[in-house]
Length: 120
Image (cartoon, rainbow, N blue to C red; front, top):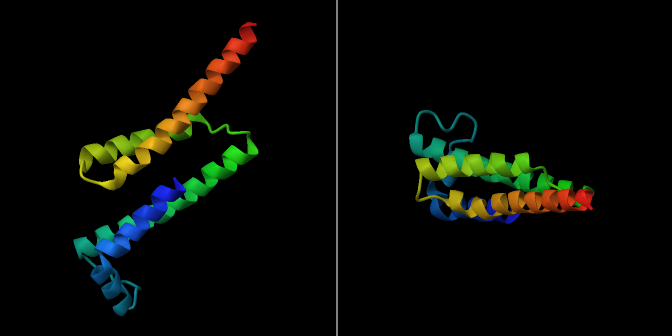
């Protein structure tokens, strides 16, 4: 997830450098106004930062719990990703699909092992 967030943020700076520069040239504060492109670019950047924080949190959870990440995190991510893909099929939402599926798969595999071990 951290890698996805980094790619996401770099992509914003590569694709929208003029918009980002104009926001800074306008003094940042209250520089978005009603411009839909500026608003979209800001949300794009902010979502990248949120993904970065989420990725760091998931890494910490994995380290502190011997690889256990609650399936609810994976399913929440999957829901957001699927909604994003439906609304914007040509987007970076696809990049977050593997991490969400890995979280769900690891959790289901771990639950399966726990249930098997309990039966023996």
